[in-house]
Image (tube, rainbow, N blue to C red; front, side, top):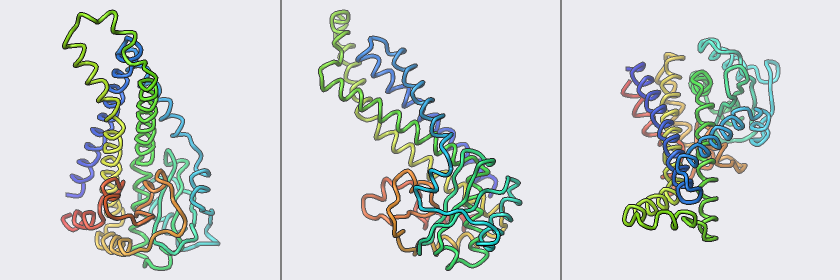
Length: 299
């Protein structure tokens, strides 16, 4: 059951990533059709922009992410409990020992970053260390180490990059339409196409308007699938599903983080740092903790 869950989540994530590229290609075709007289040319340009964004974000420094979140690096002497738990989980997962960081905050939270296991890092809040027992702490760190082992951070980074590229292209197309550029080069040549030309124009305009929203929804779906996968993988590492369930219950009752966390960083945390509610939950990158617990209970 556990391995079926892991395999299913991996398949869904790659399907969603493919949908992301298709969205980018569709938007590129629409922009090319409206403004460049070449839908294929626009599609190629869009994919190039997406790849440039992805590679540039993949190689961002771990130090920048940790600095943005107010984390300080620790070692075996300064934080022996956290260091040894990270060391144990990394050993079981068969990945290099990640760097270890602490965030001074009373809330319960943790995250991992790094484009691959060789340059990865794990951060935990001081509140997490104060409240969690050893089994629960192992479950949380096992979750973060699983993100590293499964290359979730790289996939999430690619998703952010593609979403950013889609937003950029849509914004550029919107400004060009505002200045009256849409279809200006096409109308003289395609005047006789009649209804087909109108349909293509409407579809292209809809693609430009709706692509950013669709990209956001796909990004959320990818992130949620990776969280389910990391929960299941943590159980695989610790052989203790109840430890992960108990940890999630404590995370569910955690207070929000005292410092503001930007949206890009929020997606990295195991728990929503801002504890948002209402309609904002519809666009949250993590599935509800109650749903995560329910999945674990069925394993």
